[in-house]
Image (cartoon, rainbow over the protein chains, first blue to last red):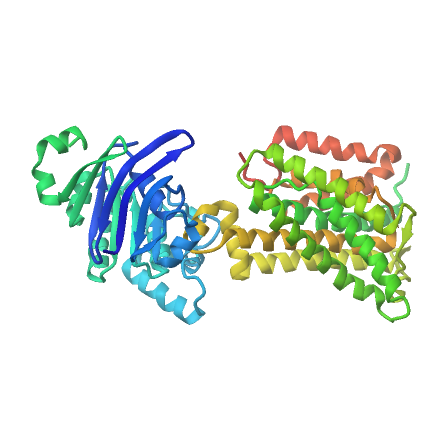
Length: 234
Length: 295
């Protein structure tokens, strides 16, 4: 198992946001974590990435315990996160944003990686030397995904990828995530856009009030009208 | 009253000189705030330490030609290393905590370094000799100017260009700019931001130490020199926009000239012009001339 989260409990000061959450992601899988706003999706990803370490429980990546480690240590094990609010470096150019995603590598290696990202997102080709802050929401999202891919992640955490994006852009991301699957990049994503997430995922978890209430394959979830309506508002 | 242009020009050069010293100081102060969100009240102490170390080094190497140049290299380096130690041992413990702790800590450092200077160098005024090559005068537009003025202006502009190159062209500089905007994202890309902060603080204190060495031959070194400059530096940082180095350069040029030319108009109240300008900027543009606004 590539990622194994077991019984984590995560807090914001005294407020507990995640209760005994357990989930697994195997190599090459695309797994989604679904739930309403405030259900605990982002907190779960933040716990894995070390932004808000769990107070108890275990997070194993490639069979090594990473719970409690700092984000930069976790990133160096091969995990990258695309946060919901993108956190684009607006003052830097698109190319500089991408370059920073590739730590401790030669200029030649970086250039080759950037070429691959531009192949994945051709829209960025003509925007390379523009300040990233001047880009549209969809273009910025391409930069943040590209920046994360520059580090050759074994596990990519995508937090609310589709938030604020036009349907046509969401369709584009659907295709590009398909390409990432072909390249055997493992993905754990959170989404409020349930249909988008189910279309691209192999397995799904549903979280509500900080607790996992469903775990299984996406087709079964799609057919479970009660779950879809009660916990996902579909 | 007819304006004497040669006096005006003399004051302009003097203002430029003052502006460059302010910029050397304010650039470090604003860099630390922009990246680390730390208001370093003790920045003046690093400036004072730079000046006193220059005194010791020029005394130690008094018989060696180029003793000032040795001090110009070694003293800021020593101050930068001390800055790194302060960041590693003290500041690192208070990131993300309430600002009051920062103020208490950096304010306490003023007293600690002040007493350290008193213990090591005593209370007597100290003088650093000007290097012979820079101790002459140069005639320009009917006035004579110390060559050292132009040295200070040159150092200021060299540092501005150097900082521009560092921040624009190097990976370190890009990381600094990125961390100033989203520290957590830089960390999520695998960079140790704590290490980056140590480097930033070392650069900032190196700049403070450099300002101290550069100013040393033009003043008498005293225990109050840290506080004498820090308030004006804070005004420069505020006018320029908190965290913006180019804002600090612009504000240093404006305040340096305003003070210097203000003396021509109201000699005793030149400093009031600076406070007046700060008040006007705060009303019209609270985030400073080039600032983007900071929460």
